[in-house]
Image (cartoon, rainbow, N blue to C red; front, side):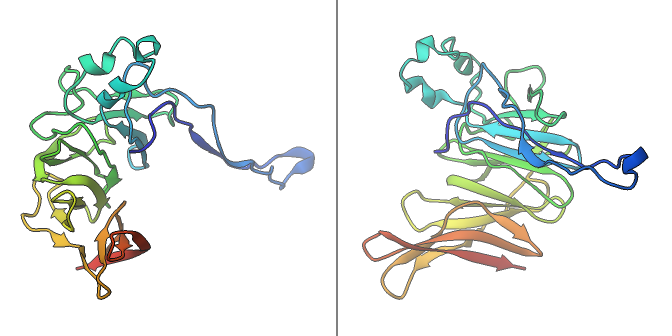
Length: 263
């Protein structure tokens, strides 16, 4: 589980400017990249496992987190800013999504047709394990799980609306995404929890459907141990890359590596 959402700090880069007069032709020294003042994304909804993705094509930042209902068990909740249980009354069995078009100063919740839900339930069901990515054409993707399904859904306008998707890309746990060529996305997941079942599935229509068969990246090693894909996917120059964890015969992790796939 990643840390509880509290606030997000916005990075800002300031370019050097050319001065005139006595300093003509000289450029002021740029202060470089730094974090700005932290701001709350939301003070009513909460959620763990947060991620932020920049969409330069549409000029937005997209922030996602799980629905936060597991935080009901946190000590002191009745006296906290979330003591009104807003995240319960807004529960939709979907990961939460916000977007910003001003570099993270102001954030807006996604809402589907005036409902409290971020997206259509026909394309997205699953309260946990979000992951963001973008394909080469600028379409954004997110995912959510409900223990029996891995949903996959996408946005063509920088995360403001989500118009394509499937509730059942596959069943599994802890999905990770990587965008490929335009309208293509890969989703890796453990199809059977607690076993060497890690596979990667592929969509070529913006997440509306997924391949029926996955490409496995898990198995046994010659010394009696095992390996499995585990972590954030990356797509680069026609290759799909994912972290791999190795374990010895007793099941103790004893190494890390990378698995690659190409067309």
